[in-house]
Length: 101
Image 1: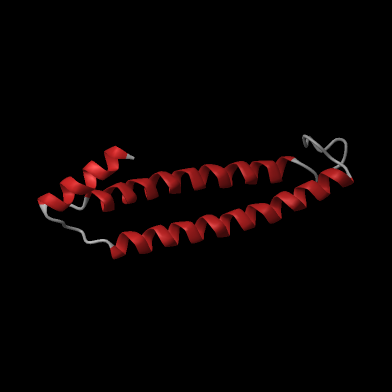
Image 2: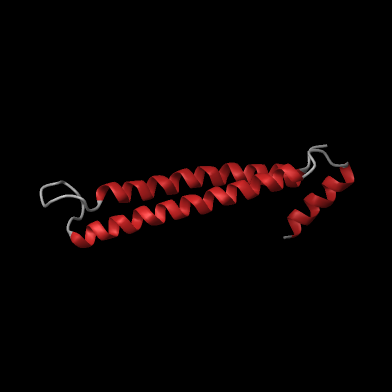
């Protein structure tokens, strides 16, 4: 029978990938609407401080993207290390343990 722990981790990884895309979008939006323009640029915030903040956001976006990528890689390694199939008894024990947490 399918390994319930493996299936749960695969589902979690899919949700994590969706959240990663949303987070990257938020960082990108912040980066593109702040700084790098004059008073008439239509940007939400301009000036030297805004430009510095924008650079900081760009750096943090890259850092977060790398961390999330490492996390996804580790999740996939864990998934790959788990057996696809387990006995009925093993699945029952996994499900019982999961409900106790």
